[in-house]
Image (tube, rainbow, N blue to C red; front, side, top):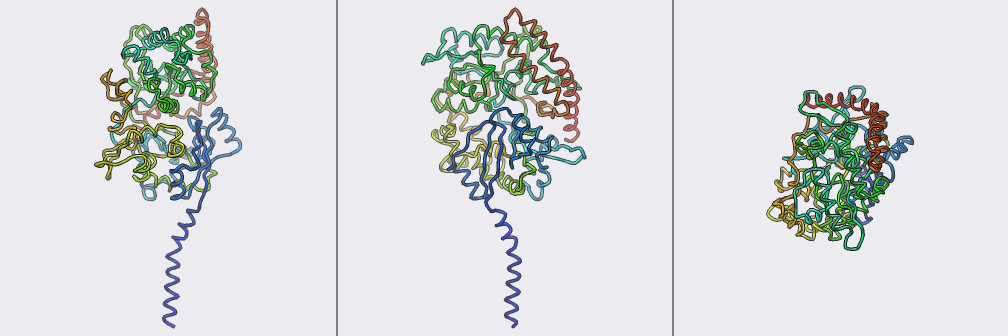
Amino acid sequence: MRKLLSVLLMLALLGTLLVPFAVAEEALEPITLTVFRGDPGDQPSDDNKIYKMIEEEFGVTFEFEFLAGDLDETLGVKIAGEDYPDLFDGGNSADLIIQNGALINLLDYINPEDTPRLWAHIEPQKARLIEHDEDGNDVLYIIPNYGLTDGDQIVNEVNGPAFFIQKQVLAWAGYPQIHTLNEYFDLIEGFLAENPTNADGTPYIGFDILCEDWRHFCLINPVQHLMGRPNDGEVLIDVSTDDFHTETFIDKPYAKAYYQKLNEEYQKGLISKDTFVMNYDQYIAQLSSGIVLGMFDQTWDFGNATAALKTAGMDENTYVALGLVYDPEYVDGQEIEEHYVNGTLPNVRRGFGISVNCQYPERIINMWEEMLSERWQLILNWGIEGEDYYVEDGRLLMTQEQYEQRNDNTWKLQNRALAFFESSPKKQGWILEGDYAGNTWDPAQQPEIVLGLMNDYDKDFLSHYGYSKFADFVNPPIELAPYGEAWQIDYTPVDIEHQDFLDIQDRCLPDIIMSDPAEFDAKWDAFVEEITPSATAFGDYMQEAVVAEAHKVLDNE
């Protein structure tokens, strides 16, 4: 009898001990997460090896929806119908989904005890990332997809805004140093005069301007950079003043100089007549064909075109980022110092949030927590050891073939989980601990790869300048201002005025650029008069917001 009772007691105890294990097993039942990306993209292959690993380890598969059409309109439809995916990336309009209550507060799930990796990831920048809701509660809706870096800033190339020019144009001219707006367009004009078409007889396009949807920054933002400042969105900020003097720049006389220059180049035929009506896919197709000599853009925005050119062996048609400034004649004889690259900045409100419709927030948080481990960050960044990279004396390395396939778009759809990883929390910068300390998380930043596995064309190209990396074409990063970058500030309180401000630019600036030179001054004056009310309202708001954001960070440091 005693033996029977002992056995029953042991079984009861064993059953109690097995309950958590059973719950854990149940929690890993297969689920499918719906995902929206606020950018165009391509569906990964069904046999993608990294997604297969995610499915095997986390029990998670994904249904991806990529942006097709206007971002704000697409988000508006989702908001109206409360049709929210589980993982929701609102792109450059993430404030719309935040303000409309589409996302959960991640701080309900992230803390130092339960999610130590995620907490350590955000903690150094929590003064910038954690905000307060209307009740004064701490809130965090999106963990930045980029900009939370470990160690010293790595700048091997310009990943953000710049004026870009094809390498073959610089080579044709004997590898000159190009620093000003006039030098840039003079170079393109000279090349076109001698080389109007490519080898196939297709005419070159001197300068493209993308205007579609939120990517109208290619049309609007150059002015602030020509004035010597990094990206602050749609305002110019004097960081040397106590009040961070902030003003809209598009309606100022120094902006007129840029658009008058574009008007001159349009009349000369350097700018294509369809540039203001083409969509993003058409723009990428033009760049991928190698016929566009120059444009203003941000490196990440045309990565698919760069990859296509490299895959096709058209290295001479890939681009160099130049930090142009105004010639002194445009700014009352002032000599402007170039500052295109900013200090390390978290990409605030950019990346995945978890929607209020999601039934599995804990599963996502736990998956992100595990994916910030060294093992998973190596998988998501570098791939599979032995297949996609190798290790030698503690260094993460790639063969030439491995590095080249990494830039192939078709290969990426089969072998990388970019549609998920690009918008998820990730390690960046230097690996600071463990067996691989001293390497970089991103293979493209690894010292041995930057120059060692660079193709022969690029090595030879840089040698003519005496440079070791393409970031040498611009000045080193400047110190990040306390407010960060002003484009990250929430414009919602002046949403109507801000939208009017943008709409007027989108409508008027292309017309001004294409206008008869005799009508340019009148059209510019009419534009300034029309935009002044919304520019004033937006500029006044941004002045207050910049100061408030700066003090929030300074007071919490």
